[in-house]
Image 1 (cartoon, helix red, strand yellow):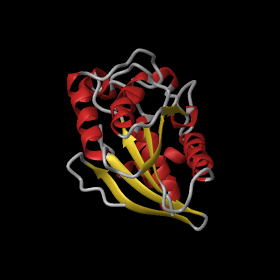
Image 2 (cartoon, rainbow, N blue to C red; image 1 turned 135 degrees about the vertical axis):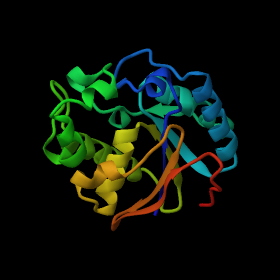
Image 3 (cartoon, helix red, strand yellow; image 1 turned 120 degrees about the vertical axis):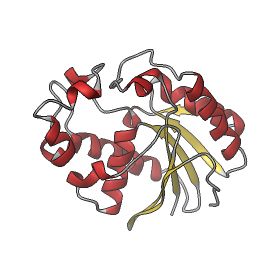
Length: 204
């Protein structure tokens, strides 16, 4: 089964200040985020990676770039790896959003939640799952593929492939610059590692 290394982008000032960046353009890694991306590149430089895919958002591309350079591969942009569309919640502070009544749906019943003028969790889950399956079809059973994405898409992918109900996906945690590893194949998926930090020893 090919191994997918699902990497969340490094820290940016939206993460640092607790705001939803969503799909806003020009959200770049901050100094800590750039250091995290470089550390990931050092860690994965000798990994037998066959391809590096990335969300088209700047913070993801800036995380993918040093990793791809370290293993001498190009970064392939894939729109299916993009962040969720948070609609009217984009650019808002999480502290304020958590006071809204609808916040309970986000945490306890995401399967019925649509962000105002945005995307449903269920829609985003099918998008990321289908994206990974499309990528899977291009590789051999022992290949290793990197996909740089965002917290919610990665958590949604894990939930889908391990059979975790969508309403429980918020129990998963995916930190900035973390590595989550899924083994995917025709028979389904297997979670190898969740939210591993850069010090994680990777062995295919």
